[in-house]
Length: 323
Image 1 (cartoon, rainbow, N blue to C red):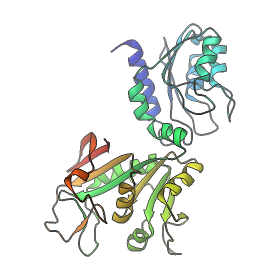
Image 2 (image 1 turned 135 degrees about the horizontal axis):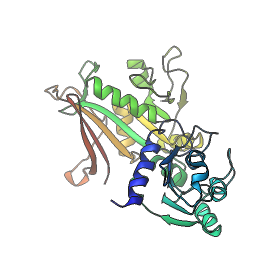
Image 3 (image 1 turned 45 degrees about the vertical axis):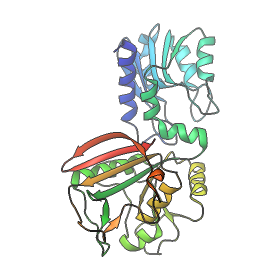
């Protein structure tokens, strides 16, 4: 591992520490070397990662190298351009993970730094940074949020007993991880049928984090615990467009089987997260992961790519993406 890769990965760790607090802005980490001065993006309206690292460095920033997971901004928004802070601090070199696809940036930060005489290198740990910032990148490029479909099932692929009972299939560790995923999401989506059947709160528990925007497809009963909620109807693509306009970078689809099947068959899922318990319903009458028609032939089988497999207590967490 090179020195640049080492410090970029440290910047990525800093970015991960603010994952649930920066939206609709990207979660970015920054390091100034030598000295190990660090920063991560504040909540909207607060300083960006580069500014935090520069303030920590003070006079030590002159002639130093600044690492940033995402291209520094060169426009004025809620804060002044990071590029101005970098140039004024006397930074000699900037190492960037990836360029920012936001139409207000798109290489402008890199060009401004080079025009000011700052050496700039781009692409260190780029693939890892792109994966970390995938929800932000998709939103800026398409206007839609990154869609995570969360599912919990037995080993035989069932989510509920024939009578509809389903709590709890997975154990405490898996449930806590699901709440962490909920805390990282700007919105959580369920169908009105799930609201009527389970009356979920869809709040963040078991971990620290903010509650997401609660989105119901259809109409929730007036007294449902999901309120206040955004109720939306119509084409799922239109739903995602509306959430994107509201600044939602990541939307988590939590159920039930009808909504999960609809998102899956429409090809709208960017990441599948499946929690599997070491349990069997043992028959064909329990409820499956997806409701509705599946692939009619083996040639039509949906195939994806396994991203990770992790053990959580007695359960497995399987993450996969479209191939």
